[in-house]
Length: 199
Ligand SMILES: [Fe+2]
Ligand SMILES: [Fe+2]
Image (cartoon, rainbow, N blue to C red; front, side, top):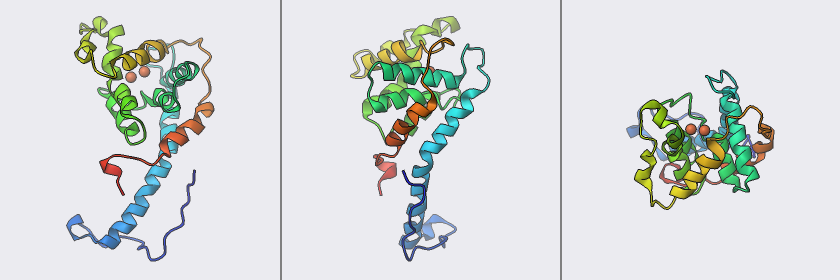
């Protein structure tokens, strides 16, 4: 990991345009260079988001921080792949910014760095997790059946059954966040893929 990258010679300090339809290739050489710094900073931003979940447990017996660690620890101890362990660690990191559709936020964050399967699991975990509590809210707990037969159905069901829905236990011996930091760096420092990240 490297936080400081040498600035190419001849790069502008500031772009000239005030509206994109007046931008130039030289402007975008600069913007592209600067934008990559966001990618390099991402692991630190995510770690900060996880740390911020240490606060109010909001009625649960564990904080969202503990839930994240516990989910990731269970995934790790199950022998899950490194990207799946990291996905388990961050699967609820969108709670604060997207309280009504948090799975989409974590999935979007992961998408350029993980397999389609891992992305699908995180994106759909909220609906699948509904099996365990939607009926308490007057909703259909089997709403995930709409996806029955999908190639990632069983893996998503297993994610919820074995790692997510069980990780509200204050007596579980979770691994510390520091144990997952190297893996988190390795996943989010992969070369990103996807249309929005092509260089
Ligand atoms: Fe969730
Ligand atoms: Fe969760």
